[in-house]
Length: 116
Length: 112
Image: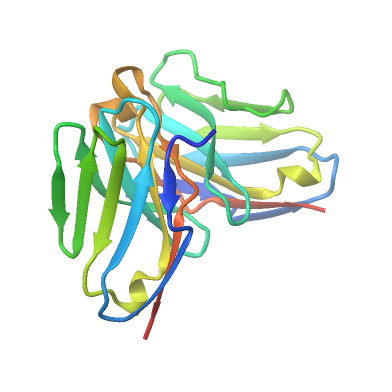
C-alpha cells in the first residue's frame, strides 16, 4: 500500500484481557519495527523484524508481549493480560533496510491503547 | 537509556521567527535523522544526515551535525503556525545498528 497501516486506531480494553494490534507495512519494506510511546514521552523500542531473520526482541518489556510477522508482510503485536501501565500509543514503522543503511522510517498512525 | 536527547524540551516562538532544536547522542552513528510528530500519532521523516556530512538543507529546514561533539541541531526558518509539533532526533547505533533510538523530543509551539 501507499503507507503503513495500523489497526485498530483506538482500543479500550479491560485490565486482564488480551489485545492484538496489527501493522501492514509498505510493500517491499523488509524492515518492520514496533515502538511504544507513553503520553508526553519519547519512543520506546519493542521489537524489530528484518526479512526472514530472527527478530530482535530485546525491547519487549515482559513475556506478556509477543509479536509475529509473516514473511515481509503483516505483523501483529499481542499483549496478554493487559495492565494499566500498558496504556500507550503503539507505533509501527517500516523501512527498505536496516537503519544503518541510511533509509528513514515510514510510520503508521499508531494504535492508542487504553487499559481500564 | 535514550540515545538521543533533545534540548530544549519545549520551545514557544512567534510566527516568522526561527526555531532551533538541539540533539545530543552517546554512541557512534552512521546517520542521524529528524522526525516530526503531530498530536501524538505517527511520526513523519524530515531529514537524514550521514556521519560524514556536516550540514544539510531541505526547504526551510537546516540540519547540522558535529560528530566530535556528538550533537546535531535542527533549524526551522521563518516558522509558521503549522510547524507546531514535537520534533525528535533519532540515531542508528553505528555500523551494527539495525534500528533507530529516539530522544524525548522538543515540543515546538509557533504562535500566530
